[in-house]
Image (cartoon, rainbow, N blue to C red; front, side):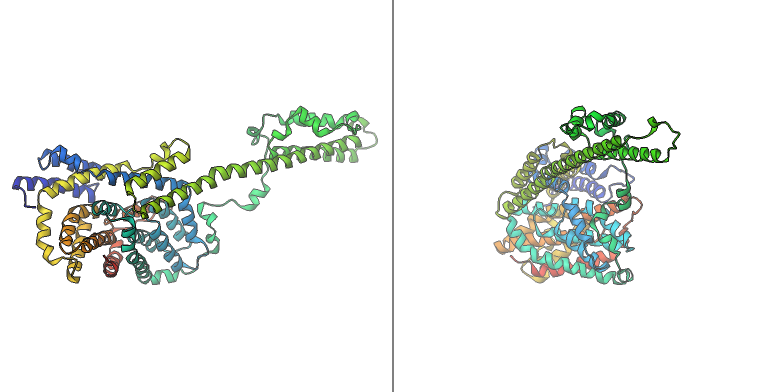
Length: 558
């Protein structure tokens, strides 16, 4: 494509510069409107400057990618509700062998559950785990962000740039996975090894992990002391919401039955039926019944003590007759029996309700997710497959979907719309084509030197213009150049672009969304916040990016 007119090149470059500045520095003092508004502003400038027509702008928006992004965010929201990420957190601390073992687990968990939701949920947990065990937070936060980046390279749904590549190239899910899985697995191990070497001294100084923190239940918050739970006693005030029966009225009625010798002496009368007739005991909370039984028992005991200490001059009316004490004991037995029966019924109902509400529903969520992955491996349309899975989860939930839909990052979808328009407008200026024409003879994928040069260009642009715009700018010309070699070379070029643009996110703190999410979430953690700075990330990021990229390129096949 030839370079456009000078005015179009200048105005298109200005509009793209607005997009780049606000995407990399969303809070720039000159125009602190954020990434999403910046993308919309640059897209509007492309149309106002005449770089592209409104029809061309709307046609440049890739609806399948937006549908896939939306669907994956909905599925992630339901997986979070199904407590998948809670189980991942439990895996991190289960029977840990020390600081190095914890770091390695963080790398594995982050690599195999690679999405923004996992980073959001696991950042606070990893930071809390490091603080509890007196470990430095920095290596664990770097492990989470870098491993999420490397692990996301293996599938088309792992990150946004892979979604774009899968949509533009037409490579199936299975072929994409087989082409990049070996590189991803080895890359995760190498990245973990670099982390262990880089922070070996700091982790060796804090090698012992408190066994108390190995209990996953303690990670959700400060547990209640067992003695506090056992010694807790319910009072009528705290149990008033469980029954409408007045406690003093019920006790008085029970005392009446206790003092009625005609009832107590009649063996054919079932006192349980009498009490149930006056009050539906089986509908009263068992804890409340236990309290009533204990109150009656205490009154009977106090009456017996008063009778034993009474002198001979005391009136007989003040003493407690033996038959009344026996009747009170019978009443206590009746109440405790009813409490036990009611407790068993409540436990059964609770188990059935919990099974229906939690276990059965969670199983359905996991099955739908697995079914979606199987459908993707079979080569079905990725956008419609993910959308079908998202709608299936909404229907199975059988409740208002608004809470889960509110977790969808609509600002990200709008950002992608503006980015599609902006990048397509910049492509129409001819600058990306001219740049590629200059380096294309030296960056062919059939030569090791060409692959190395292409990788360096993609790494540089991914950290300057971000990885998704880089893929949109270079994807078509790189694929066209490789297609002139062979069809296999074209697929290999797409896979190289996916691998390098994804791993390049580890170079700097601004290189990927996962880095920014981990950094932001770490700062927000109350009382345990940690700031991961740009320069604290850079030394490890440079070493890991170059080594992992180089090793992975050797394993990518056509």
